[in-house]
Image 1 (cartoon, rainbow over the protein chains, first blue to last red):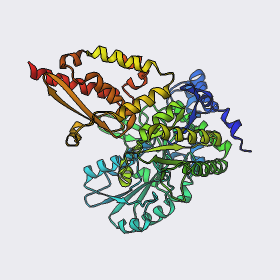
Image 2: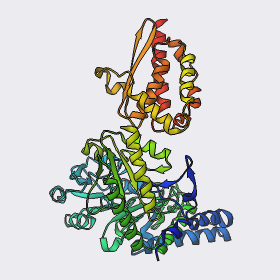
Image 3: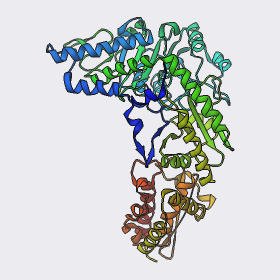
Length: 404
Length: 140
């Protein structure tokens, strides 16, 4: 049974104070907090079996290797990948995107096209611009509408036999819009293009099924789903991962090395050069266990309830405007008070112990679309409460009073 | 008044406030009274980098003293720049360059001094002092 008060006890940080006030943490879309169950796994690793993996014959190395590979199986099961070697450990979503972008640089030629969406985070735009510069490929953008939704009719028009890769986030970090990725993937496949989905914002709320989606690549980060920073994963279909060249050279990724030639290791090691974030990978597995223990259905039901409650309460404040009003959205509210800079609101909220994000959320094209400098973004997780939303609403009212 | 006199005056004013709310309210009011920059100087080259909100600063030399005007799209930032301008405006470049900025701590705004802070108080101080250095070289 989902009980938020019991869940909150798992997160030591939630009982701390900020500026003399109880912390109200509403910046979950930037990073989530870590439950004791995951912290314990990190402590256990460094206390009991810290060792380098995949090469030692000694006991510690074996134990660490086993746990690290178990984490890979957990992730495989979680996203329903066909093989464990389709899961590549990365340092995070950005790393995964760069790995794929780099791989495609040897597959693209002048005149090829890459499609991205207007809802992207900067980390989703820059690697493709760099790829286009290297290869002479063209970057096309799926436009968005006022509600913050991608316009599928325009997407259809952009697709052609020149399209080689489509790249869209599952959920927009700035607005919370859930994109119709099933449709996007199906359409892209019809013209023979590969699809990479950024799941950084979706994995904290939804359990993706990569086989059902038939997606070619899917990337995410651990730190947005109760895991540590500096850890993420790339799922790639076996056939694609075999086709892509290695990203970085180093130990772990080789089979045999002479000065004349190196043969690369099999999947997944081909893409995992050097000593990885071993503890991070193991803790990522623990975070997935933790979230599955709570249950993604329960999480998404509860977060939806929080979203509806917060939306209703915030909209009662006069001159408050919410950006991103798609019916399909996750528990993110991006808003502004009319005539007041989001930075000012964020500063007052911080004084009141409330953590929100302010600014352009690394999504300047979206802010340019709405002609605003940025927004205040409150993002809710399953450990937030309606009482915390009441604190937020009261604080926004106070900020409005002080600032107007 | 010397820079130090003005700083002491500001410290006195802020010492009357009991909590952050009164301090911020005062800063917001100061922001509203900021000597506004002439629109022609609100150019990209006058924007101070490193701030989440936009801050424009313009400097002019009058009788060997620098006069600053500024603006920002955020009101708290405007308050902060207003305090800085009050301290530095109508001062000789060499005094601006030499000015100690400890008073920021004394008026309870230390949190804004961190170099990673998004409002860029550090960037603002640096920029104002850069103007002073530039004018100082002209004087020689």
